[in-house]
Image 1 (cartoon, rainbow, N blue to C red):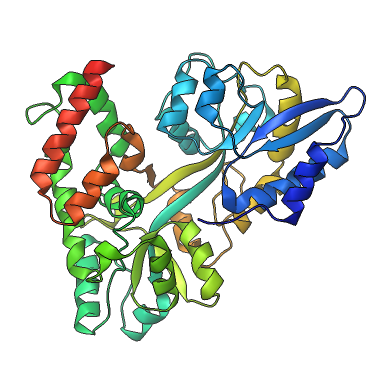
Image 2: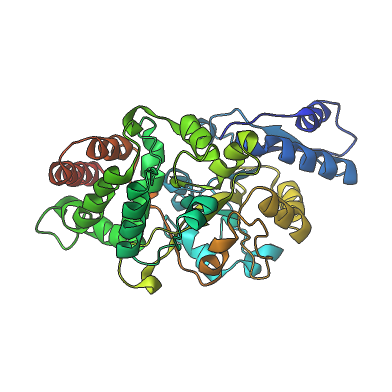
Length: 410
């Protein structure tokens, strides 16, 4: 997930520092996703040169939470929408965008991803712009050479792993040294493939301080079987997984050192740097014996919003309208291996993730459980601990205890 601000992006920033024309409104645009800053720099340069009423200045370094607290948020942002960002939504800090053109064009299933975190009465404050789908990256050449089909059930998946092991091939490349890779991968795939994640966390919030072994839902009850299967993945992973990180995993997959890798499309971009012709595809991890249960883990990777406190909301809306033109939005999603959010968005053309399109079209996707757990609960550390030998039962009990304490403070 590395990248930088290239020449085009730097040009846009320099242009933003020049003297504004008479009557021109300067707006601050917040975007911190490093690997796409150059692309957004080019978009800003195109927008700024196309009209004379508004000038966009890119901000990629500010602390967004601190700016909200100080009453000085950006005028517009295109930013990952998650549990932490939802705090501002539920407090009414984001303005209503229900009347903008694209608001009525968003797929209902995609808009639900926003609403799973928080809503504010009478407002549509977040416009989903880009969705990424994370699943099992697999080496198509290895599968073909071994006569293996993409598994449709959990038992088929275990059979694939056993067949690869028997052939002397590492089934799964693990990068446990970086706990976020386990959270978004192993943890999210096994829970999301077994449970209704959104319903589970709705019930957890209802239970609050009562969460435990005797409550209607709990980590101890509902996550035990998925976590046991998550730990079982160790059997089919590289023996040095605990000491390997994200960069090493990307390189290993490019070199064909393993058949599968549990990562998102951002890893494909990194793998491509050293192995541009790696024969890779994607499939969602099946967790039951019914193929109809299989779904894809998605992330609301980029969403547009305009703070209520912005003094330049109308100018910000002009830039929002530019960013939501189909040719602008669709070009980004194709280039950066993401899926569109409008009803009429074109299908993803890249063969590496095209296998996920049907799941996305049918709304067979979920947001990862790791993204629904507040940061005050060190979930990534707990997941890493379970994968490296800690008791599943004891760890889940600790997570329930943490949830109760957090609910009490809230």
